[in-house]
Length: 218
Length: 302
Image (cartoon, rainbow over all chains, first blue to last red; front, side, top):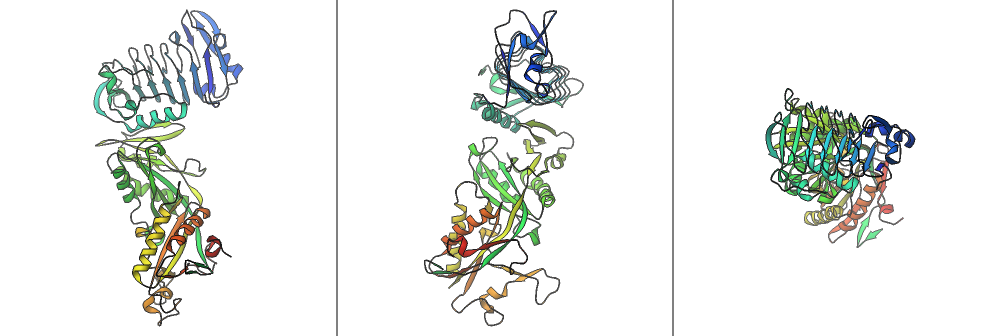
């Protein structure tokens, strides 16, 4: 793992839902290890600290890698304004919600409301994308590699090979060593534009093979 | 100094400080990346007439390019960073943007001096364009009829580039001069790694070397190098001896002086072949350009 990445590792699987605040690459970039561990987290109604559940390694970097099963962790990368945040496995609700910039990559599935209210930036989902992705988004991109139910408020534009996705996936493979299938890099994507009321600016790029049932997981 | 019977004159090539960019063009196949690069670097032999000097540096394999597709790297030289920017903006749009399947990237990522090119070109997208950041670099996505054109925002500029490296091949006849020049170009093109040089003239060879100014026309900034024209051997202060009946020149621009020295060494070595009498170089007495490439030093002699 690169030494220029802040690693946030979940110590043990969570029985209860945990909602995190401020776990974004741009916020972490200005914080020490201790300050990162002090970011607020909510276990139900009980206020806690990120460090109560996660080990933090590294500080003051705008590249963050979150390790562990985060299916029960909600709000990761919400409001993120820049930098890069990778989640190796699944993630819970509201990933990259109201994001305004940067890159969020989730290797596994994401829960509902991913990239809700997104203003700019990119969310890449290697697994299945939960319901209502990109709802209310103004701009920004969701790259869905493992299947997605596109909201009815997005309109299908075309099927093509986006050079941007090729560049992005090649970058992720080289920079982070992610095992990205060649078919995703060279493949075709269905472009859906939305969200309603502000069409053409937000987009969902759906890997064509994922929509035909050929779902690829890393 | 002699190399395989060819006399290496004790003189030097005089090079000038320039600024340069490396443009990486990728496409669905090398056919299309090359097609775009040829247009991008067209009409760019001499900065006097063309405002810049440019040519293909070499072809790139998919594992050498940012997006994993076959590509071409081209170098473009101008007098300063602003000149590089202007030429990139005016050239990339009609040549690379228009070419099917291409994307366009900066090839000098470590250069600290940078010029912003993408935003101006992306305006072709008529406000349908969008930008995105990958790996800390901004890229523009411009909608086109085929799909999208992807273009990097900023390009690195090598401010210590050098133009005007050269050597002249003095031969017994025109076919010998041409064969030697072709051998020199092939040797320079075959240099391993990223050579960091281009040969901006047609096929890498110049037949019309020039001198500064003109004896007959005040308005001309350059005119034929009469001292090396065999037909004028008895009509002017000729540099040619009897038996030299054709001269060709290799002009080399490089990202730095070392790159030019390496290319001159490879080229001169290859040009020393039957029918060639002398290898010399063009200079202006050393007062105009700060880079002096002494032939005998380059070839490992005195």
